Length: 238
Figure 1 (tube, rainbow, N blue to C red):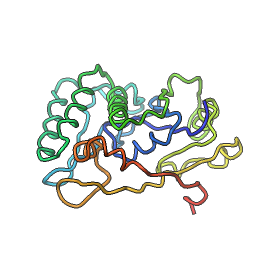
Figure 2: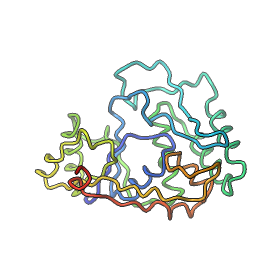
Figure 3: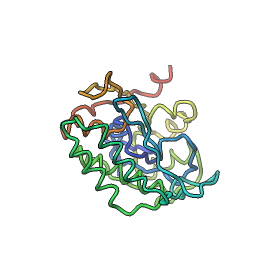
Figure 4: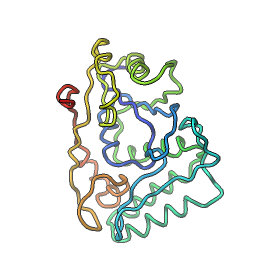
């Protein structure tokens, strides 16, 4: 393997910016054997509706601090799938590709999923398939023989995969050890999100909602909106 490596926690029906990271990757690593943190996007995402922004949130069963993302169980005591589907159905009544969006959601919900990582990973792969983002090879960090933590583990994963470039979102800015990657001959690029506007219901455009919004409003042509590139870390952090 070689080229661009993206390493990210799986996210529940993520925003289009995550799909742009997937589009640029030669290998995409689902980084789910790390600690779950409340408030993350592993189990929740914003949805735009007639009354503003709301959240789709996966319910957790018996969560306790310190659990890894791929250990956090879904709470099946409530019918959250029907509730999430109903919110999406109502919010996108007038969307031209509403049928595509609901069919995608139904495919994800029909798969067996016991943990937050399961359903979030399935949702990402379904969105990638819809927009024909077939470039990356998808792997799980748990399946790689790489221990450690923080920048050292990320760098070791990239090296193990034969990567020459590590592409990341903006959240890594304050903790990533950029020098470590340079010492290992790996370039670091941060996403340069264009946040390309597209026809959207319910008021002013916002790029930060679930990519299901892009499906519902643009259909397969929504892939044309996923065009962001990267910027070198030195320029990004100045």
